[in-house]
Structure formats: C-alpha cells, structure tokens
Amino acid sequence: MEEENNLSGIDDSYYDISSIKENTNWNDVYIQRGAYNHLSLISQYKYDCDRIHLYDNNYYISKSAGSGVDIYIIDRGINTMHLDFTHVDKDNPLEKNGRMPTHGTRVASVAAGYYFGVAKNANIHMIATDMSIGSLLLALKYIKEIRGIEPHKTIINMSFGTYDVDNYSILKDVIDDLVASGFMFIASAGNNKVDSCTIRSIGDEEIFQEDYLSAKSSHIYSVATFSNYGSCTDIFAPGYVYAAYFPEEYIKNYDDSKISNGYMYAYGTSYSAPIVAGIAATLISENEDKKKFNQYELKKELIELSQKDIIGDNFGLNKDRLKDTPNRFVNNGK
Image (cartoon, rainbow, N blue to C red):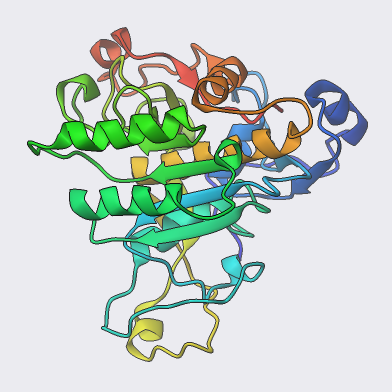
C-alpha cells in the first residue's frame, strides 16, 4: 500500500530516536516510514521548501499509540474486512443490503487504522446510526450507559455537519452532561465555506472543533476553499487523506471472508476530526500515569502543542476567513 506523496522525502535514517524521546518526553517512539502526508504533517514543524529542500515523510508517534483509549465514532457504520483493520476484532455486523458504509469506514481508518490511522493502538467503536438527531441522541445515551466505560479515556468523534431543528437544545444538554461526566468530543467544522458561528453546527461550544487544510504541496498550510472557519473553530488539521476503500468489484461480489486492501484519496472536515481524535488518544495513552484528561484538559493540551500562526493566505481567499479564526495547526507533540 504505497502512497503517491506530493512531497519529496528524505532518507528514513534521518531521525534520532534518543533526541525524539528527549524532546517529546515519550517513553518510546514508533516510526511509520514513508507515511501518508496526513500523518507526516502532524508530527513535524512547519515544512518550508525554501529552507528545507527535502520533506520528512515519516510519521513519528509515541509507541503507546492510543493504547487503552476508546474512540467512539458515530456514523453510518463500518466494514472491518480491510487490511487497515487487521489488528481489530472481526465482529462485523454488516447488513447485506447492497450498501457499504464507506464514510464511517474511512473515518475509522484515519482515526486508528493500522496503515492510515493516527492512533494505531486505540480501540475503535462504531455506533451505526441513520444520522438523524433522534438516532444521535440514542447513540450518546448508549455510550454513557456502557458498563465499565471510562469517560476520561473515551473520545467521541462526530464527523458530520449541521442540524436545523427545534429541539437542538436537547442535543446540547445531552452533550454537556457527557462532558461534565468526563467524556471528550471532537467534531468536524463542516464544509459549507461559511463562518461556523453562523450555523447550528454539531461542534458547538463544549466540543473541540476543527477546520481543514489544502493538500497541495505548495498550499499545505492554507485553508481549503470550502472549509468552514471562524472563532467557533479551535484548530486546523489535514483534511486530504488516504483511507481504507472497498472497490466497486468488491462490493458487487461481497464476501465476508475476503479482506480488501483498497484505498482512496478523500477530503473533507470529516477526516480532519478523526486526525485530531487520534492525536487526542495518543496524548491520553502516553500520559495515563501523569494526568486524567477531560474536555477542558484535552483542549488545553491540543492548543498548547499546536503550531501557531503558520497558516497563510496562499489561495488569496483566506484573509477575511483567517481574521477571526484561531491560527493553529494540530501537532502530536513531536
């Protein structure tokens, strides 16, 4: 599974493990060599082609890699019969109705997949819904009532957009209650190319909300043209990713014993959110003996680690959008 990277990479012997451990305070380091850009970008400082001619396309991660942390993804479902999920339980209750839960599968792949994922040792849990607000409320209720769940080690990822409903306040109350119990939320900012403060986004107030960036090597630190923006968003993350994919032929001749190795290039804030969720999982697992995380502590840590003021106006469209938007690019601590 090889990526066609936009950026030319350095020799993979460039890194110094001892130096990385000293600078990050990680107990140990895992390196994915020649990684996909959405991974390599989050584990290094800003790449400047005018100063550094070769891009470091390795992905550096603490060896705990999210171990012991639960990422609950609310989406339309998942198909785990893919090489990216070879390390997970193969309990895959996929309905054979001709539908493939492609979106949820890609989101899970980016959050914690073996090849494409950020937190490779985190536990993935998919809550399959029809994405209505009623099913979302039921999903959140279900998560809260799971026996033995540890809220301070549980991240809820919501990679979907806005709701314009009269009972939105009910959803907010449920989320606030979960946050008060220690659960942590990551939500996508949306792809409406508007100020996210002006719409009823799922990422309101208590939820950590992210925007996404362009993928072109010349514009890797520029806001994608159709991403939402504004002061109600918290951080930027890559939004162009490679993720698990099931080719059309696989879907037509679906065999629940056949493992797919397909992958695709996808984009959207839907994929920025699980990148941030994955980083959150690695922070929690690496600091398990040092601190207990909650929404406030997680947000504080992610903001402290982020790279400040590196997002520019390369498209000539971002000047007004960046005016009130926090200029922060997510980083995993390396």
